[in-house]
Amino acid sequence: KPLVGIIPTGNELVSPKTDPEEGDIIEFNSTILKGMLEDWGCEAVVYPIIPDDPERIRDGLRRAQQECDFVLLNAGSSAGKKDYSYDAISSVGEVILHGIAIRPGKPAVLGSSNRDEKVVPLVGLPGYPVSAILVMEELVRPALNLLLAKSEPAKQKADAVVSRRLTSSLKYLEFIRARVGKVDGKLVAVPLNRGAGVVSSFVKADGIIEVPQNKEGYEAGELVPVQLLRDMKEIEKTLVITGSHDPLIDEIIDLMKQRWPDSQVASSHVGSLGGVMAVKRGEAHLGGTHLLDEQ
Image 1 (tube, helix red, strand yellow):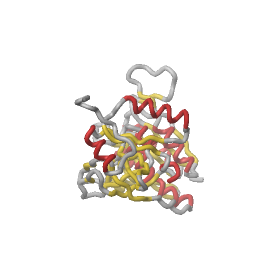
Image 2 (image 1 turned 45 degrees about the vertical axis):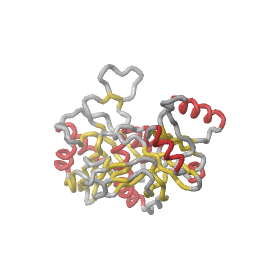
Image 3 (image 1 turned 135 degrees about the vertical axis):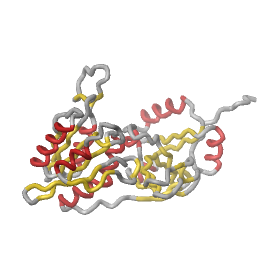
Image 4 (image 1 turned 60 degrees about the vertical axis):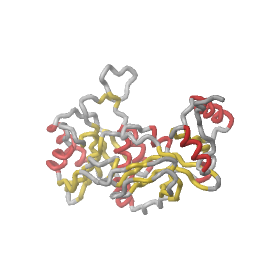
């Protein structure tokens, strides 16, 4: 099995503990990355957290590339002034590229070093967890599959109606997490929060909508390609609620989970009229509506 080294960096990071102090940020990215690597058939080692010190990061990278088959340097790559991944990788080996036209994940650094006539890939991952996960899925996993002599797993794709308008920059290939449900025999994709730090959006996602580079986005009701992350049987048990948000929806979800533990709810907030139109078009099972005139 390939041994993959994970190097967390950052002055503000602390190892998981029960009593973090004010200003401490629990370092949990390596826990996610290690779990992904082990799921893919690799062995993973997490090195101690290194502060934002260029010399210490270089030393840590040199040690890891001597001991591992593949190295992930986490959180030093961004637009900030303490961006040390590029310098560290270029001092230990060669930077192949810095910055990729994908979002989330654009600050990633791809490089390599030579050890005993063997190439060791070196990857600088962004610090935001969603960005790091996407770079792992889209770029690191295919490279590891070559080391594992495994074929790339086929992605399950389907076309779905998007529940609300999606705007996108023309500069990037964008990946948008979404809940997916089936309404009147057709799939409906409900986009989730796009924030690169909202790791819960990956836990909730049933699929990923890909917005190609040079496309401004999609209009509500448009058919979009979705990479499915869950089995279709699970997706068919999803209740799609579109419209004005009502706290009662959260209560309904709790009651549903008690009675039907395998049920899912995909809820998106697009306003009262948006809810009425979604139900009219057959793109939602329910629509939340505020009656402004009670009579």
